Image (cartoon, rainbow, N blue to C red; front, side, top):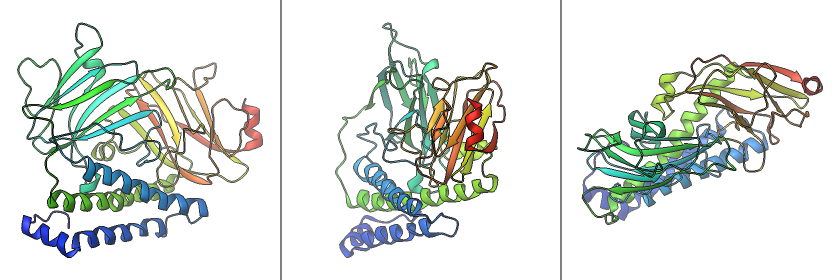
Length: 376
């Protein structure tokens, strides 16, 4: 169980007896109740996506906590991506994670690229440990000191700033995760940053795989499925209380669970009948960017590879007065900012102001699809 410190002998016995594997399977079995809980929708699509969601989190957990769990040989990898989603993953983001330790020092070497936003974060813990994930350090591209070529940079990741370090990403002794967010405005034309992560003072070589790493990795992977699944299921059910509205999400809650402190989030729930559309209207303030997306009930972004399910500051068409109107509907009403529900009757949604000077409240209204056609 989480929080128990076991000796090497106890862990070896857990593997030899099969207990570690049994607990892993039992936790996954209990996680299935997330899909069946009373507040979860039971349509064929929602059920199928719910169980697929659990398999996706399991895949992410095994990759993170068994295959890429060694802070002595960390690699920046994509845990959340097109087919592994959680927590209203941003379709404009390219996420990378790596395991690190506050007892070590690291260096990130990179080339800036042209992607609109680039940020580096250190955090305590992860979803596989339960509880929150408070931040321990943060630096973004606009604050980086670049090398003479105007593109390259070096970031030192350490608890104390090394002498002569131009760029420093702080850690604490409890730090366990490095997160990189790269955010596109124009995904087709912007270029991602090129990044390499090195450990300082020792050869970058994996530690021997041990019974302890396997035992802990199985537990963390299964707790990711059950823990994160339960967290976001609770959030989704809470969002139902303000269905088809967009109230501001609690900033402390967002930061505690890995949200960007520079972003104001509006999380909520949408549900539409066959002939209905949700119209979202706002006047963007001076800000770095903004976007709006729709997700399924499980807080997975809908498949942005094949359908238009989000809009941002670059892709939106604006009204003459500078405002923006977004239409969520099951069919295209001929509006340039139409978002496709992809055959879903309901789901969650998220509006973001990113580094905004002020944060106007987005307005929403449900209309008949025929009425929306006149808004063009």
